[in-house]
Length: 348
Picture 1 (cartoon, rainbow, N blue to C red):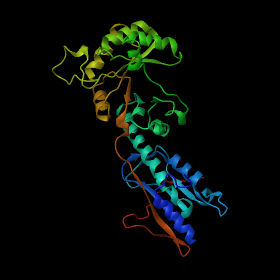
Picture 2 (picture 1 turned 180 degrees about the vertical axis):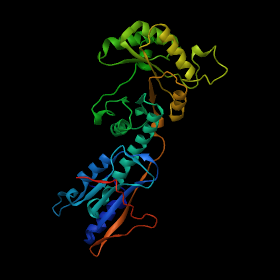
Picture 3 (picture 1 turned 180 degrees about the horizontal axis):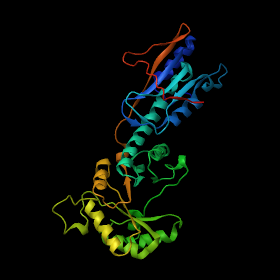
Picture 4 (picture 1 turned 90 degrees about the vertical axis):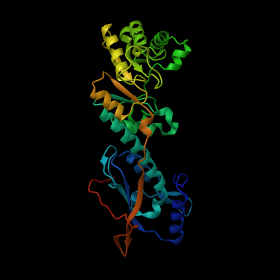
């Protein structure tokens, strides 16, 4: 990163030109986003500048430039308005010109995840949101994405990497693959899982393998008793669960829908398994969660996936001030004036 390996080539050339010319201008760079959002990635951006700003000495050694910079920023988790300045970096431009690609990239990625997750958490009205999109993107983004979800209120993640920065562990359910490995016998798979995994792990099982969520949930609850923490409904969006065959006609019966949840809850309660929780997944977004909540559908947690990676929350960095004749003066491209923000705090 110090060498510009991850940087757009033109930023590296800017630095090269200025250093070769002996021109070391003092500037103020300001960073902003064009949308209403939940800010995230600030801590990473600060770390990038702190660890990777500077220049090579004539002898080839890296001379860190952090002490010569004044960086001010908002905090991860802050809500921001369109075009609000979220971070400024002031100092010798040659010390940090090569880092623009890097800090803008982390801000864009983390803010997207944080904003999407925050909207889902708000829609869930206090119920747990499980952050389960790991399989939909490259594994190297998991750690920071999990942190972005955490600061936005999602309390469960599916991988240890996603939980790394806030000191937790990944959680999950008895998956379809384990059920298949035991010949499609969900009860047997759940029993083996409960016997052989760490007893501190909450046992949650998928119950849609046979497209019969009610009977599978009842069978698992009867088999495991208090060891079963919850069941997860994940019926494919092109299927209709068996319990709904006689109810169709007034609602969309495919996938995980409100009537299916009600059927499972009523059956569990009638059999005395009121303690067993219901987790739903499969196509849940803000609109679907709001509809469930508006109708008081008895869901205990929402597992949400790829929708949390949707959209674009790009950030832009522009030089706004340049030291000219000993004073910092506005000097910027048209349409990008200096936009000071009293909410920014100096990073020590």
